[in-house]
Image 1 (cartoon, rainbow, N blue to C red):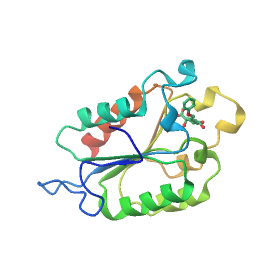
Image 2: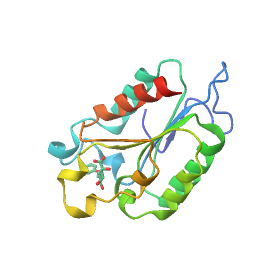
Image 3: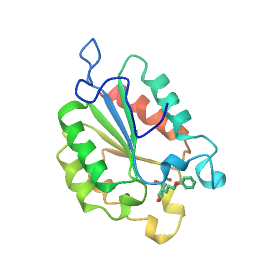
Length: 160
Ligand code: CA2
């Protein structure tokens, strides 16, 4: 189930019984509306369906999957991830191109970070070309549609 904070584990105790650190998948503004508009750019999958695909791909690895329209909330979740997560997948959406606060928070994360965009931001208008998050991302996935999330989870499972 997608939602603002849909975690199988509580935020205060995000590890599973085996003590495995969770993978954090963080989504920025407007992505809660996926599947409802512009399917030619963003596909037809809803964020809830993408979340289910990520959990399936993660297998036994715990996943914290969240979406917010707030920059401050994203920063707070990155801070939480610094203490709790093995890796981060982040689709910062429009904040990719504006938020030095998110860049600064991600700089503190010691593990791998995958920046994820559903669309190929480099084929789009110029204001989508310069992502601050790319300056600190371990890797960037863009243009593979919703399937990019599953591939990001798969890559991180092999890296962590
Ligand atoms: O391609 C991506 O994943 C983006 O991060 C999506 C952002 C956009 O600002 C980035 O440049 C690329 C926009 C998300 C808009 O979400 C929508 C949801 C439903 C329908 C239309 C847009």
